[in-house]
Image 1 (cartoon, rainbow, N blue to C red):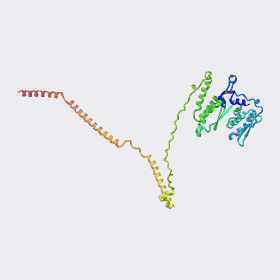
Image 2 (cartoon, rainbow, N blue to C red):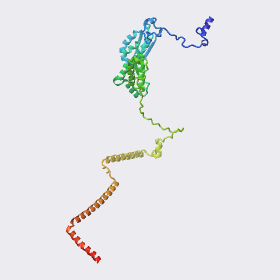
Image 3 (cartoon, rainbow, N blue to C red):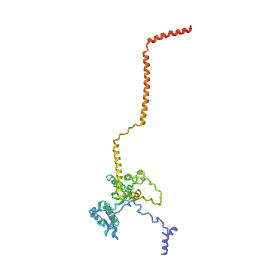
Length: 395
């Protein structure tokens, strides 16, 4: 026995000093199995549960309960027989409590599938989140999974939350229908939650789309575009083992100009409190109004009221008369003086030109009145005189 104990302490068959110290050797059991490389085995396939696997049933009672809103009470009362019969097939009992507003599911002696209670819990959760009963009952199938995404706490501003939730739905629910087709999931937006039913892969895509939309990280339309691209790429067997990032579009978030918040100037800190403002009585004491009698006070108030009325009446009269005041002429005194200077200069120029014209006309008239005979006669008389002078000079 001592020898066996020593062998156990040393390790597996005494492999050496490293194992003798008690250190664990990682991967010592990772030996190739005969079914690891078998192409006929589909490891992702979920086999349908066979009751013969658990003939003894459940040892303990498991139960789950959930509350539902008041507006679902009438619908659940109508649909409860259908839900009860669906759960009875799997050996699960259910109870609808209208006083507390809760639904409860629990296992029974007839329950064989241990996971069916989790499915029943998801069923009552979906029913409380306004999923129709025929659709919610499909969750009991092994291939169907569900995810309830809480979106109410992702954003604080209620107006923005409502707008982004509408963005997720799209016009005439077109965006939601596109998401359902591309992901292969049933999606229902109700209040502060989004309920989704489908495969694990589809639920992962739906959660990403919903969270990106509500947090304003990416519009659902861009997610739809990428999903369409992936769908087309999946049809090509040549690209099955390649990375698709080079084919997928990359969307950049555009910078939207936001209002600049005006920074308030911080006043210098003073440990002393601000001075106390004078009260109404203090102001009356300063002005002397406090010591006046009631009659004088009322007379003073009446006088102040009359003065205010007179000011208001004068202002209204001024406004009414403003409509009858003629508009001011655009020309000013300076322009008038400039115009007068221009007029005087123009008159002087005109008189000068007229004088020049008159002189020119006189010259023309004198030239026209000259006769040829007189001119010839004058010429004849003037010539001998000149000769005589010359002769006299010679003599």
